[in-house]
Amino acid sequence: AQSVTQLGSHVSVSEGALVLLRCNYSSSVPPYLFWYVQYPNQGLQLLLKYTTGATLVKGINGFEAEFKKSETSFHLTKPSAHMSDAAEYFCAVTTSGYSTLTFGKGTMLLVSP
Amino acid sequence: DADVTQTPRNRITKTGKRIMLECSQTKGHDRMYWYRQDPGLGLRLIYYSFDVKDINKGEISDGYSVSRQAQAKFSLSLESAIPNQTALYFCASTSGALGNTDTQYFGPGTRLTVL
Image (cartoon, rainbow over all chains, first blue to last red; front, side, top):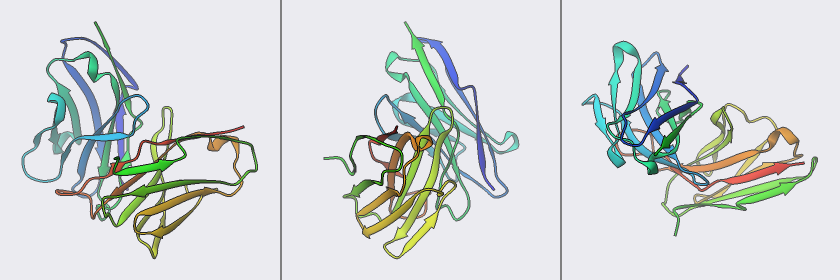
């Protein structure tokens, strides 16, 4: 079975500071990993994904994530937070036939001026 | 126009009522999904369908049923709504196996309140 753990239900940063959102996965087979963002009153939007190949993946809005198999992690980072980054972020994994996603519980990112 | 649409966007109903949430997609995708989102619990899969004749239960299907009326339409029903079904419901679609070329596209959500 696959699972995802997001550490921290809320993360607060100042504008311009580094953003680090943590995601660890559990899977017995090679996973595909995703980060989604949900802005208030909207659906989920794909930020980036890892399937195969390069372990450092770049996404939209300056976000990137690194797949570390030895640590079973896929942490999301952005060098400099912007007020518009305030949203809820979800990590997700798929393995079983690559047909369904299992989501983490989400991390709310709060950005202060 | 949005690729995945959901109706209604908001619904308030009473315990015991039958409710149907509808989802349509214009992307020509074969696979469609229903999730519910609860604060602090993330998204959990209710049902999914790979084509009109294929329906599969997800993690939390009890109390729900679905209908795939056409490739583009996938409805979620609550036969007898109860208060703990109060949640935000999302529909999603994708063309094939999730991976290099495919991802899930989400609708805007339906906020359901059961009194």
